[in-house]
Image 1 (cartoon, helix red, strand yellow):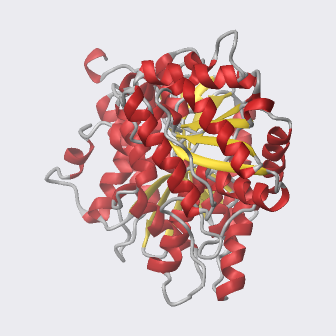
Image 2 (image 1 turned 180 degrees about the horizontal axis):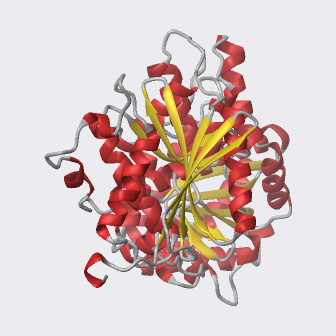
Length: 506
């Protein structure tokens, strides 16, 4: 029985996989046209799996080609002599693994690699397709420049040398190396490896359903896609956790199990995908804090810091500004960067605060009481927590408040999760109960009405009777509570003005 892959390249016999047919056709076309091209994508994006599939296609359908895959990972600052020894060794290891009855000869210097490649063509009577993965792993500039100079020279006589196509792949973009007047690696000819589409994620999960009989609820499938945006490593990791840890006896994979998986990945597990993103985000705290809690900077690939975050899969270009598009990454980054102390918890443990201030007679969370207390808390602090009219600031503040409540009463808080057919700002769970909470900036009455329609739709799809909306407004000067009822659904609305003077100023 196959399984979901989380630890590296796909093994078609052991793992479920997405065939990526159109992408393979594109790669094959470039190879047939003798193109030298590049491929850069974040780790765990499926680069190596793609190359394996491309090599399989070449071996089956292009018998006169000899594909060779070599990784420069770990080459670091090798001298020319050390590089040639490693390169020759890795070429021959690859031939052995593929049962190719040929040998790559060691060269005395990088320029002599031409002779080794020509001998390879002569011995095999095939044209060579050279795929170099982790190209940035060779960090010695002198050695790398010599190797790239060799490739550029070969390009102009590739028919006689026999090096039909070269593909450079890596995590970081090596624009400075591949861009010069003689380079065959045209930046515009880069091949992109996109994340899985919604249909591809559903197909991957369906493979498991068909082989095992274990079913994913439709909301779970959608939740996996929307929380990962199809990032291959994350899709496989969530799916494996759900079927092997949360539902190991083949039970139907339900939303309550999905929420537990999301919680574990953002709070408990050390996942390599999330760790890589978080470690890179820590290197650029100013940009990340602006994206989360301030005015997100404009996206430009020519800013070296933004470029680094982009090529490592942390941020992307969202309508011209920087954003963290993968919700699971954003949750982890948000949890790390949000201030650890904001005075909220101290407010709850004051001498006269009791359990019934936040719960009903059965000990269940009473969200109306809780959010009423929140507005009282804001009044007491005189809105000094709000210095900017930005949604991220408000979401953090309410998130911190509700998280403190959840810690006291054994609840769970999930920011920006998929529920009711859309992405809700905050979802609170306590046992089998749930509360949907939206956070909005009040701009005008049209947007206000649209927000109410949106949350009633979420309620309808989630089979919930009540929802909660907090509007922060610079257009209002008085606190308001409104109870809105529509088609047997109730929406509790609080309007919180953000321009109230501090108590000491009144």
